[in-house]
Image 1 (cartoon, rainbow, N blue to C red):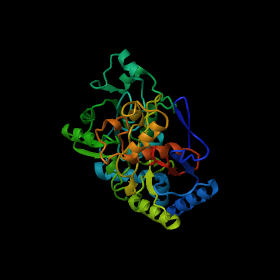
Image 2: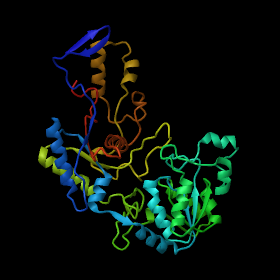
Image 3: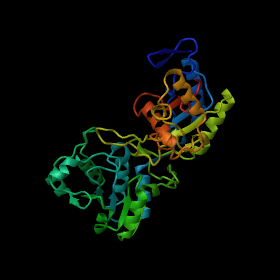
Image 4: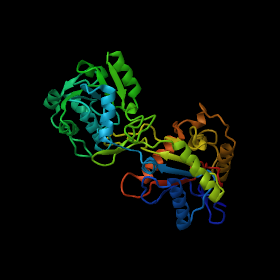
Length: 413
């Protein structure tokens, strides 16, 4: 029942209906090794958690599985030597331009070792004031102070240091300019570091270029070829096939890889479509419920202080079941309350909005009552939620179980 007081609607304890919306639970699972039946591990971990925590499996629940769990079970690893071998085959050992890399020890340090091991000279072109994902070399206000315009100004390493001095990342405490130089020189290669946001800058130094950006890579390759580069590849082209039995990824190559050891990287998982379908089928057989499943990597989340927006993987979700296709199909309740039903209060307002939600059409694009709802892919939204819940440290919850994500105000009312 509903109880009223001064225009407000509250729920009584007699018939509350569903009073909780979306719930996301991190599910603990064992450490996975190569060859483990990760689909069975995921299903068993969910069922064990449901018994221990007292929640039931429902239709349209969502299971998120971190990409690392799948890649580890696949054994999708590669050595620095395998990276170097593929690069030598592609570029012939010539002086190599390496442009727009991520500023990250986890994401790029082992790749840079392999790059340096493949050539005698690395010409490293860094975008500034930050990399593609928002990792800062310096704060933007310092550019204005020195009259530097990153859209047109190209800086040498010496000139960068003269103007800005040290460049320490606010979260990691690493000077990536110094760190990347040390990695290249430790492999016996010469290192030239430049700063520019124009890919063509590197072509004056070498015609052989590796584009290391993630989401803008195709445009970067196009601009390099237009500037006269002789050989152009991206990280997605490296280890797209196995090298001496190494791991690989046919679509993304080295994109989405992480440091595993001082000589190996873990690659993005392959064949995830068959995996999510198998997990969905196994849960259906065990519970009778149709649960949606996705594999997720980095979420698309921007940090307001460090300005990092996180998504170092080529996509948030490399595979998902069909029920996760599309974008949210939602109405803005506050818009309805302030407009169509501005003259109603209490139970009358509640009932009117429930009926409106229940009768919403299939096509809300452009509808005023849908304005302000999040215009993003469901897999980006849900994958980002999973990434925040599971974290990237020692929580030990590589599986996330989400309930109520597709509920509305009318569900259980």
